[in-house]
Image 1 (spheres, rainbow, N blue to C red):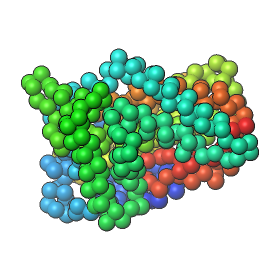
Image 2: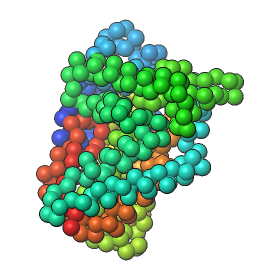
Image 3: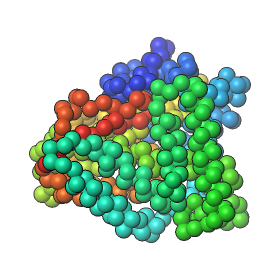
Image 4: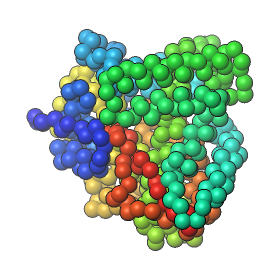
Length: 406
């Protein structure tokens, strides 16, 4: 069936209302991205699951499968260009993807993830100590003081990013998800981020340490193949960006929802409901990545009554997928940590399932109970409606989390 494209709101003012508009078009909706680029967004749980599991038809390499990119119609200063030009496991298919994922998965073994527990606890308790020094009655932005510094410090510590280089290394990820940037800012971001991460790789080649960047430089697969410099930079792009931005969003939404559903906060604080339930329900109802770029149709394919032509780009609309009423019924839009079915696809599925999921869960399992245990009188300083969202249709997170600590 024919659809008029829905122009995505680059300011991200109400991504859940936008997801509902997309769903009203059917499981797959035609959308217009910055620069007038046309694509498809998937908001149905069943359709998303089918696409995520079919990596033989829905492919990741723009340079092979996206005609507009191959033909030069997608310019180097396109606002979303970073999502297609970085060389990493998220932009590779088949054996190449397996090679990269196999090397990088060595970073996220259960033993390595559990070994980060003392690091996480140290950062959490340090941040809480800093918060405790806040003068009584002052408003504190928990995003600036807690939900962002925790994953940002951890990922920088893990990958050996020097203190003086951290702002540059992390800035690219913040700009990358801002869909209000100009073409000039997009092109400059690719260059800045590439240079910053390239310097990190070069410094670790000169002076290797006990960090994951040094590990990735020397890691090799069963055939003795190592990551190229471009693959190392692209991999760090994913690790630093996703490792800091996504958990920031989850923690922010979890805190806001618990503070606006005090009865549920009491349930989890008293042990009636687990903190894991808080995490999973937040991932469902407030997917931290609301539109994940890109997959490309390897052939004409029908999904949800719509034919996606060969070569067309597809975004996974996880914000809509998590609230699919076909799965979660009439209460799909409600935050409810007691619901039996918290099914979501916010970590992806199949070959591209998020390798960092266990680490994110561990961070949240330590951070949330520690925060609410330290500050039992925690309350929002404004109404939830006054909290501004990120300027993005790709990411779903609050721009700030203003609270009173007691």
